[in-house]
Length: 234
Image (cartoon, rainbow, N blue to C red):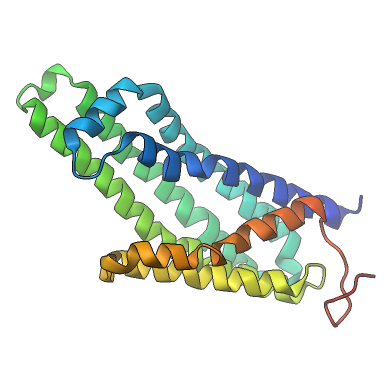
């Protein structure tokens, strides 16, 4: 295996770990434990499945850590195609999102403390604690909506690097760029036009498979030298 292939597969493997863990807190826990508009039932679910909720918190920390390794692996793989773009990719795709994941864990921690109760919370009634817990969970969701902007922006320099590098198919670059626009649109709609968020999520889903396709290509095929047409490998 060539060093280029090794770097590509390493990047794909670390990317895969994020793809496997990410849905735990973003999709599974909200659908299993959180009940929109019902703080009491949400608090009951979290109390009954505290271990699952804690795994979701750890999942955020794990993703925040692995993001650094992913962007560093991609930087090593693609920096020859554009050093400045590669650094931009590391900042928008690793450093900033990683900090957001770690900070956002505090919202889940606060919600869990309120659900479990403690002597210093006796000044609040149970209904008040449940409502405050729901508030922190809502803030967690809004922070994720804000983070979607970064999820999109980092894909722009990545897409350009993939287009330029010569050892990855350019169709992946196009798909990643569309993926970037989808995330940015979702973040924008989440704050400015929330009534369109659900329909936009459905429309953007096929575009967001660009990251999955990119990850699988790195993991399965690695890096292959392409001639100018981008259709044949040497």
